[in-house]
Image (tube, rainbow, N blue to C red):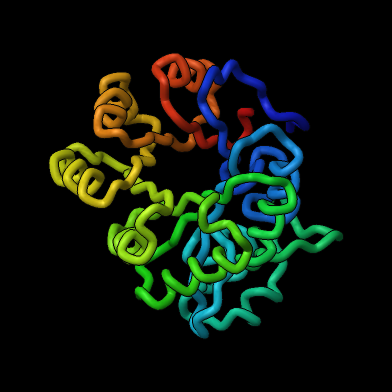
Length: 245
C-alpha cells in the first residue's frame, strides 16, 4: 500500500479527502481525518447517521458490518452500543490499537483544529429536527459559515436552506441521473444547491452549465490522476478523492 497521497496538478480546483485520506487509513476514522488535517486538502468529507436514540455518529454504510464485522444497522440501535464496536483495519483485520466510529463532535474538532472545511453528508432521510440539531452542533463549533452540507435526499437539504439562507449546500447525484436532468436543475436553481456528482457523469459541458447558473460543482470519487487533472483543466470547482492531493 502506498504510504503517500498522489500529488496532481490541480490548478484552481479544491481537493477534498473522501472519508478522510481513506487510501492510507481506515475510512471515517480519527486517523484518516488527522492525516487529511495534516495534508494540503481543502476539506474533509464524512458521513453522519442518526442512531435509534437520536444521537449522531460518523459512519458511511447504514449497516456497520463492512467496517466492523458486526451486523448492525445504525438507525435501529443506540449510540452507546454502536460506539463500543471497534473498526477493523485497512484489510478488514482486527487491530491492536482500537479505533471506533467517531462522533460528529470529534470530526468537527479535527476540522477546526487543522482549519479544514467540513464536507458533511447527511445519510438517509432525516427528520427536520435531526437535520437542524446537526446544524446547531456545527454552529456551536463556529463552523456554520465554513461548512458544506451534502445529501442524496433533497428534503434534508431543503430543511437546511429554509433555516440557513447562506449556508453552502450541494445536492449529491449518483447513478444514471440524466432522466432527472430537468428536475435536477430546477432544484439546484430554486434552492441554490451546488452539484456533487459521480465523476462518470462529468463533462466539460456540464461544468459550464452549472457555472452558468452561478453554482459550484464537485465530483466524487476520483482516484485516477489523469482524470482528475482533466477535470481541473475543465474548471471543476472541487474533486473528492480517496488518495489524490
